[in-house]
Image 1 (spheres, rainbow, N blue to C red):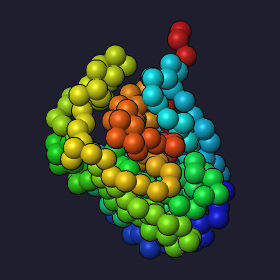
Image 2 (cartoon, helix red, strand yellow):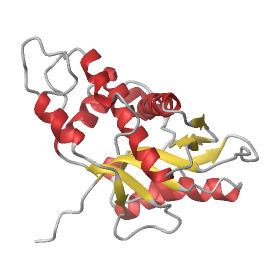
Image 3 (cartoon, one colour):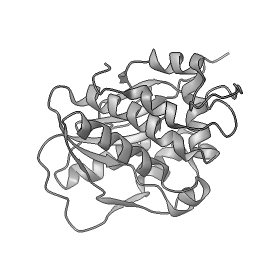
Image 4 (cartoon, rainbow, N blue to C red):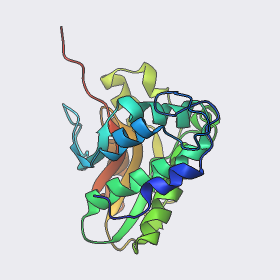
Length: 233
């Protein structure tokens, strides 16, 4: 689906401080976030359903732009870990495409980004998912959608998921979030959770359970990338 318009025009507004975000190639005079080859790779991706195996209970239907690899993976790492904030706009536009695919023809949505801990926000140059959400919401509104961005949850300190196995991720996710108030936020229209990557699905499932308990059951989760299990040898 490419119905949101002008997706890749955003890339021409970005200055490369350290080469292509997808492959690190340096091209003299290039002012794209990604080189032409990586743009082609990203542009070929289409949102599709994805689901971890095994999927945790209460995980809503998930839609991802593509697998966590190639230019998509490197672009996300450049954005999150190397502070290339300018990539938030094109990556947010890609996330808007995933939301559109997850919702279908409704053209009305409530976006709930998974909140980050204060420590993670400091380590990742700020609220990376919040920036993606703002740009995704703006892209959808420009295409005629009715969009609300809701933040009913706050994140509590927890271990970095990178160092945890599947069981550890599930245990950490269970105690990772709290409602900001005693009640949920009344909503009209579908609720879609947003995250950048889905691995085990434990975090999205935990958020979904909390929201469901206050009448905000998510219709779907929209993510940019889904990790793929490596085959056992």
